[in-house]
Image 1 (cartoon, rainbow, N blue to C red):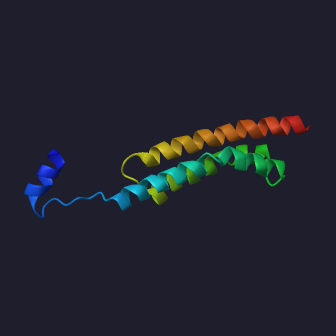
Image 2: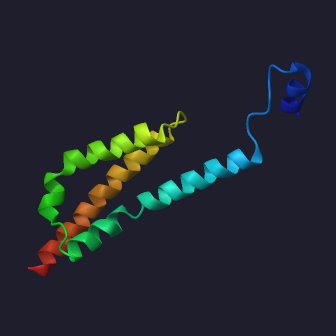
Image 3: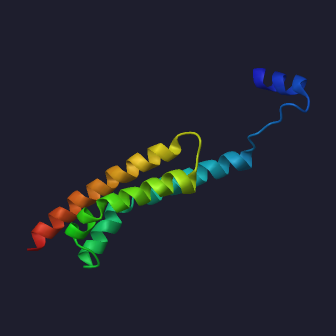
Length: 110
C-alpha cells in the first residue's frame, strides 16, 4: 500500500523496477545455478569411477579449482545481493564433500 502511494506521487522519478518477468527470471537462474552446484559431488564421483581423474589429482588441484569457483561466482554471476558469496561457499563445501566421497571410493577400489 505504501509502495503504490510512493509510486503514484513520485511521477517519473520512481518507476516500478521489478516486473513479473524479471522476478521469474531471477528465481529461475538462481534455482538452476544452485541445482547445478549440487551436482558437483556426483560429477566428481563419476569422473573418478570412469578413471578420468583420481582423488590425488583433484586434491592437488584444489587451489586452482577454488580459484575457478570464486571466479565464476564473483565475475560471471556478478550479483550485488550476496548470492555470489553464498554460491561460492556452497560450491567449495560441495567440492570438499566430493573429495571425501572420491577418497572413500579410491580406498575401496584397492
